[in-house]
Image 1: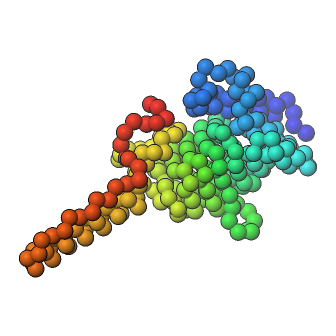
Image 2: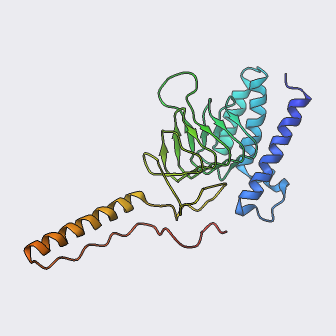
Image 3: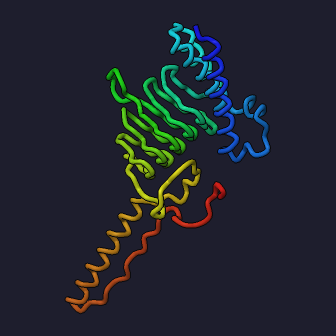
Length: 246
């Protein structure tokens, strides 16, 4: 059975989780730690997970899964007791978050609502993602299979990631693929999902530019008046103030 050392470790981890929520959630400004502990569903899910995981590691049967099931019913967040989670995880809102049995999460990771760290197929063994430190995963993102998300990476909302992600990179799309943001490294939590690059719009712009060049060349050879090239506008701007602040 878990002893006093296990209890002390769980208390330390939950305190770190509360600090992470206060530091990274704009809604927690001016809110006490006690209020966060009492009213933040992500903290409730992590508290229950820490207890269930300690029971699982101690070899206690049935009870860890019972705690996990009860927590899912109350918070809408499903964390398997056997998954391994580091310190300082922040789950914002949390509804629909799923963390599978063999998932590994490092320190200071941020998950938004609807994130899935899931498996593929029916294979046994390691079948869920490994998320390294300081990773931010946007709302609705699906990370599937035994992939590795490198330190400091940023996963855009609703991305579907099935391959490894290099450290300090940004991934968007379905299937997810890396892009860069203003040529700088991505480090630490950042909730600005509006100013991510749009690789599809960029590809269409490149094609439109190439077609325009070919049309002008043909017009010059045939002495025809070239037609204006249609303007391709991205669905979202790539510059401007961060709506998350900062």
